[in-house]
Amino acid sequence: MAEIASDQSLWLSDGASGPTPSEETTRRLLINNGWLKLAPYGREQSRSLATEKTIVGGYGQNIDPSGKHSIRLSGGTRSFPFPVFWKERLPEVVASLGWSKIISSLSDIKQKRERLSWLLHGYAYLPTPALSELSGMGTATVKRAKAAMA
Image 1 (spheres, rainbow, N blue to C red):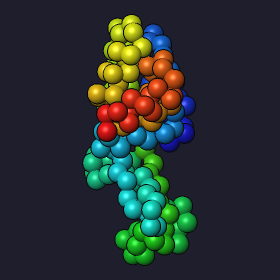
Image 2 (image 1 turned 120 degrees about the vertical axis):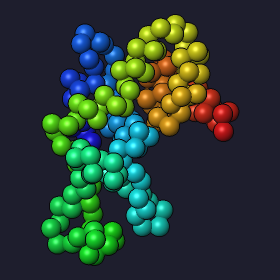
Image 3 (image 1 turned 90 degrees about the horizontal axis):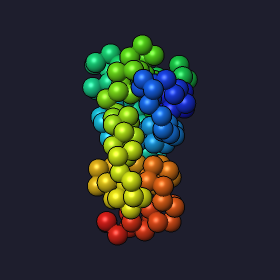
């Protein structure tokens, strides 16, 4: 996930400028767009795994680095899989997330409050620091606005 988030060439197309998403923002974009899913792990934890759409479409796979256990044979409690996206398919995956659309739409909105409102109505699943950075508002303001929507 960190490699995907840090590669600026994937996120900003032809001459576009703007922030690139953090690792957590990337994870939430992938989950919201159906590339990853949250699977239960332990009592109160969850981990991200590649969806059937990702695996069947040839975009990536769930990999278990231990080599000792298989998810299908040992179950999820004995293995510790994580999602991997194939490098040659990454541009397609990132393009489907709509990050450049978010950045370009925000550049048209001048007032911070309007930017925050627009973000919360369409992208409230993004983490608070990302919403704060994109809207130009403080994190406390974003938290209050999120709480008011709930």
